[in-house]
Amino acid sequence: MAEKPQPVRVLYCPICSLPPEYCEFGSDFEKCKPWLIENAPDLYPNLVKEANEKEAAKGADQLQSLGISGSDGASHSSGTSTSKQEEVKRLPGGKIKKKEKKEVIIEKVTRNKRKCVTIVKGLELFGVKLSDASKKLGKKFATGASVVKGPTEKEQIDVQGDISYDIVEFITESWPDVPETAIYFIEDGKKVPAA
Image 1 (tube, one colour):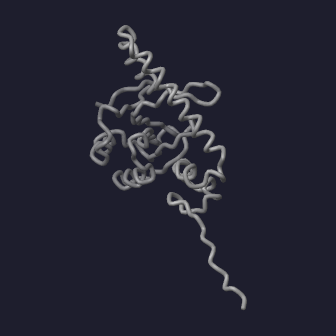
Image 2: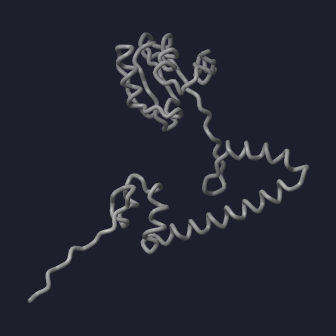
Image 3: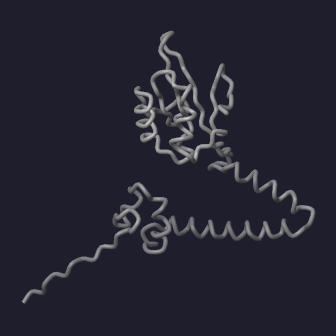
């Protein structure tokens, strides 16, 4: 008699629910990497190599920081250097990118002499989903609001009409994580605090 075929056991990633071979095409590949290194190292040898290099670099950094903080004179300067390191991010090729300040910028732009558009930038830095924010703004002010890419390739909310008079109060009430001190207006090309 012929043997009954046995079912094939397929390994699935618990993060993206794809087989490990397809994790790199999923939406959460960065989150999948630790699981892949542990459970499927043969599929992604480059990830294992990168992880080993990062651990070696981390160990070297820890040794270096121990050497620097051991002397009394350098202990004060190490505190200022760590705050600068938090603001600066290294990009490939040695380029340096400064960390963005958490602030909401509101700008009123006049089109065709009479029509106004109010632009809201920076809400996403406070964990606000821009699509939800545009819907709330559109309902509150009974106008059109949409999420668009600005000239710097960052997403912003364009609201039809001049709503700059009430928008600060609405933002602070709707999203308590956004402090009023972090909201700025752009008037005549200058940044002015809203508070």
